[in-house]
Length: 145
Image 1 (cartoon, rainbow, N blue to C red):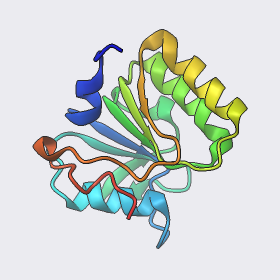
Image 2 (image 1 turned 135 degrees about the vertical axis):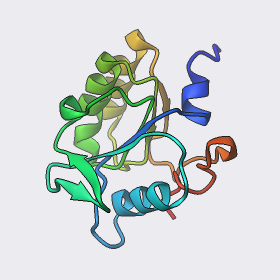
Image 3 (image 1 turned 90 degrees about the vertical axis):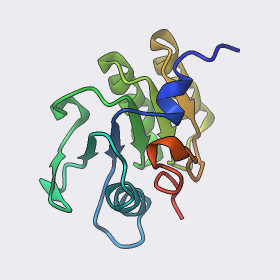
């Protein structure tokens, strides 16, 4: 197994939270709050068509609207949206994704992996609770707890 792009997963320079939210108790709200308040040292962007601003930061409606290419994407959206998001992120040049979404069917998983493979986008998940990466101050921030 190659270690290519694992640095983007464990030591990302920038992060996009897809499905970031202010809805109390949601995975997107928890991850966004943790990263936003936890001292992540790089650019942090939110993606959700329901908001234009989250915690004083701009929120973009779609991945295509992002001003740059996030090195790591944290996906907190419904299962059926994951394969398309992974395809879009991979095509843009995102190197790693944490898929917190649950309920992906085997077809969703295969489509997600097929979209990631040609671009060598690393995926952690789906249906996971996050990861710990202390050097970038993401030790608890990517956890949906």
